[in-house]
Length: 442
Image 1: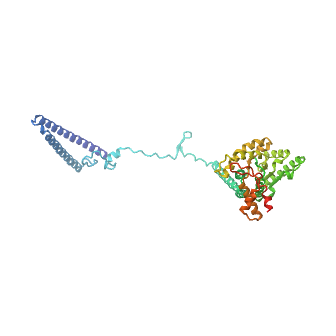
Image 2: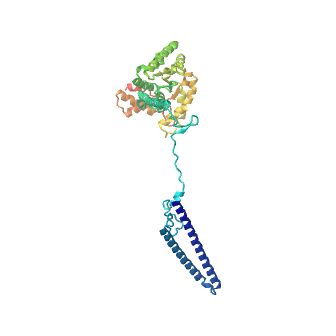
Image 3: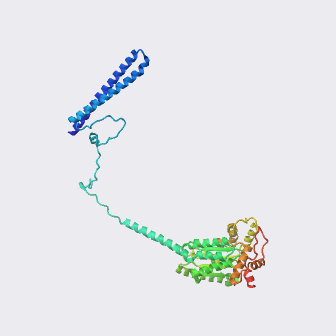
């Protein structure tokens, strides 16, 4: 009933608005025609502006009268109850939507269809058996729990591997070895850094696909044997004396006639040590000093141990060779290129360039001597300068309890033979080899 009343009310109001608008249009047209006729018959054309002004005033008065009449009629109709559902209208609001809400116009709000939400049916109609029944609940899969267990196992394994990696590096105390080498070895910064880098990379894990083979080459007196003794002493302190071997060829196998027997004994000794190291989960160290005097039988046996794909325990080992093979290339290169080396360049920079330039040359030379050197990482040791010889004197005098007088050290260093000065550098012929003998004469 209310819907019909509201509909009739809206229709009545619409008809009323159309009548009022038509009446207003007719009044405006009449006023316009009257003004035009007056303007045509007017003898004075200058008064047309005043005529237009009066026409505007009359139109405004007509508009206000019609507006007042519409308000009275709307109030009368609302009081009589003829339009119960229609809202009371006031003056027209042009180009504004203020006050427009669905609650103010229930006829509009009720006419807009509202979409209802469809409720999800708890039961599903199956065409095969007929009837409505609840769909079967999926059974929880056990594979999900197995997947969770697999993720947990993998995470624990990775975590343990990382922890063991750190523990394995810390076991060998490479930081302590680095401090010792930098303090005790003079003039060989690049070789020391290269050796420590190889040890760091190799000792980071216990599983390897080949043993670590490093070969240090340099002229006599540059510190090869001294460096080998320092490395051997450090490894004895961390892995034990039984897993470190220092092999001096001229001492253990001086005669070539016994080379075959020496090779067999050495192979047996290495096998015993690697088996013991495998049981203790450690990496053994084998140092071969004066490798230039090694016989071919011994080199062949070592090559078989290094290059062959044996069991895992033979892959977890470190072989360090100390030799003066290729010393002529090193000496020649340093004497011929010292003048081109900038004096501004630091000592570490000069030694780094030495390693980069000499390593390919030494590889080519050593590979022709024996295939064992193809498996080794070559690190050249350069000539020692006079400043390095003075450091050797200072260190030896301090060890022997002598007062380190700078004047006395310069005098002793001046007694050492040197190559002719090249590019401001004085290189020693014998390195620090005579330092101990001269200090003992004090």
